[in-house]
Amino acid sequence: MTTQDKETFSPAVRNRKRWTLIALMALFLSPVVAAWLWTPSSFRNRGELVEPPRPLPNLAMRSPAGDPVDLNSVLGRWTYVLLIEGPCLDLCRQVASNIERARLSQGKNEKRIQLLMLSLTLQEMTALATLSQEAPDIRALGLEPQQQDALLRVLGQSSEPADQGLQWIYLVDPLGNLMMRYPINSDAKDLRKDIGRLLRASRIG
Image (cartoon, rainbow, N blue to C red):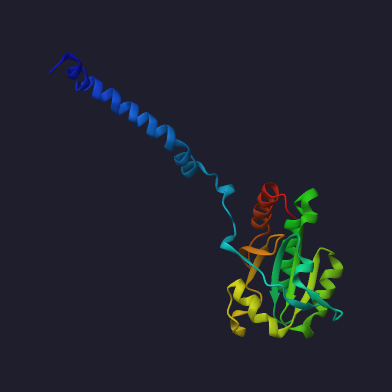
């Protein structure tokens, strides 16, 4: 065995090569490990992501005055969607208030956000119309009965009456894609943190 071979297979050389390999692996893996270990809790989504995002169908709806409205014409902003079965009672109004607080907390970006309250019972739209008069960034519309199944399928809800109503807060992007949902009792600060990050990261809407 030559002197060069002895150097190649000596413990010192092997250790040096091993440490070089470890250093290279650490260099490439450290960003991944750091992101996994040190992602601040404040950067985690409060809502449940819809993966992949689902485009909403362009449904025919009715305004409180009875005029026809299609869904695409009211999108174009980051839109929270509430489904209302029956009258808008205390819980309904509290959720609307939480969303409005989250919207107003965004400062100059508040106009990029709106709340769409969709009534599944056209004859119960009076209270929704009152809410939209109190806050102009709340839109109140009624969904035609024959179109409800199509929307509920996209939202992931059954068309059975027991599974409808005020259960979730949905977030739709300005292009009409359902991308997140929140339990109906979500705190306004959770809505505020998520929408704030989305508005900073996005140039649409």
